[in-house]
Image 1 (spheres, rainbow, N blue to C red):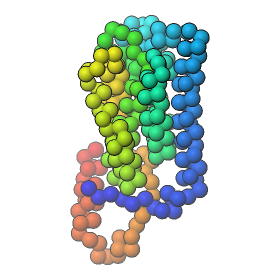
Image 2 (image 1 turned 180 degrees about the vertical axis):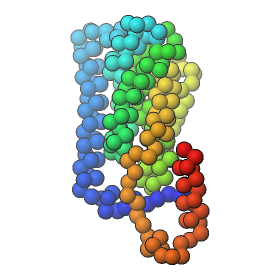
Image 3 (image 1 turned 90 degrees about the horizontal axis):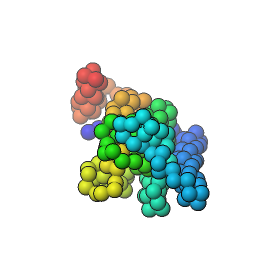
Image 4 (image 1 turned 60 degrees about the horizontal axis):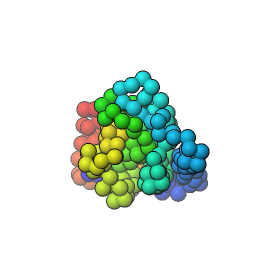
Length: 230
């Protein structure tokens, strides 16, 4: 697989640094909102879990809004906060145009998909959205084949690859349905938006010469064939 090197002037530009800082702020802002709702729920005794997703009931559809914001306890929200911050920052920074369209699907779509098949119980927590974000970023990096995106994909796999087991019904009290729904939607969105947010790649002197290495020509031919098939 041929991996493109990002253009250094683009990656180290002032705009890129500013976008990274904005991505961190936005991701941290959502995590802060999660903690604000959690604090209000547990201090005020609001019992917000009753507004979580309840499959195949009209009243349970309120979970499309509330599910990612409501958590059962401190370990629950803590486990979701760090991957949300890391994955959310990666998504917003690497794929800013995609994120405007992908995040609404992940926020509400994950719960909506789980609503159709999940167990008849209240499902709460941002873990479905976390699975969707991490899956999107991981798959997008593999599809785009630039060094920056691939590097982030491998980093996320190293940090959170073990979470893949969470899409299976292997632990009682865990909403594997939300996890699976998030992963499915994240994968689908990565395929749909695979041509968005392409970054400038570095071109070498030999690429402008008449004699181009044969391996590069073969790689480009394969890439074009894949694009035609799509």
